[in-house]
Image 1: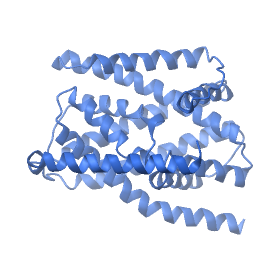
Image 2 (image 1 turned 120 degrees about the vertical axis):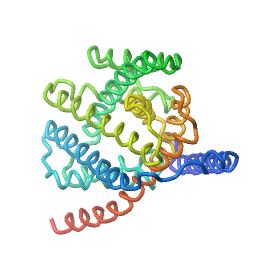
Image 3 (image 1 turned 180 degrees about the vertical axis):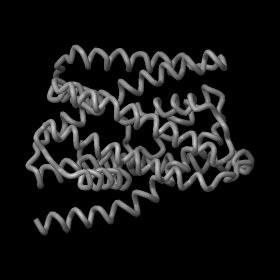
Image 4 (image 1 turned 60 degrees about the vertical axis):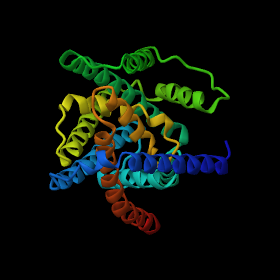
Length: 309
């Protein structure tokens, strides 16, 4: 698909999502009017947790790069992670990942095929961890409330079994002409490049698990900001489902896509759309503020450092 077509699809999708969001809020104004910021100090905690999430990403990226003989400082890795998140916000189809690949190629002569291997390893383990946590949390919610969406449960089970097979059997698949199928194929085939390093796989699993729990804690606090108290296990379920939306991030940073996934998943466990949408939009606002402040700063810093070197 040509770049211009990608941009057009992304912009149209984003405009449709924004229009639907405005329409929904206007039609349900009374539901949103009952929500107020009862714990604004938690916003500071959310910012700290958001930054911690990026620190974890930086550590993970460092370990993966070391496995492929690329050494960079943790500060450079953190700056690059922030820049990746920033460009994901302002470009369609997760353009920040392309920017990171270009940076690694220009500075470290890091081949794109190796970058794809790292990305594949992360995706495989993210989906594996997310599906396990999603299945366990769904069953725990069902055991205490009797609420469950069997369609979501079976989707999680299918994802878990698929990536379990990939993890242990790692079949090599031929590439497809279909763009969406090809994304999946590239993830699977890229996994071969890094799966033999057991230490890296173990570290990636641990950090991915911690990241998912940090995301769950953030979502839990996002509800608490509005005085909405829900069990932590429910936010683990919602965060796990949200992690599976990575491959359909056709809008900048998955704007609207991740919110829709969270809202529809929340309905299945008894959380109203007004509550879940308010919480997810708050989280989106936190990410916007942090990345729009730090993104340009670190972009300038790395650019200046590159020129000096």
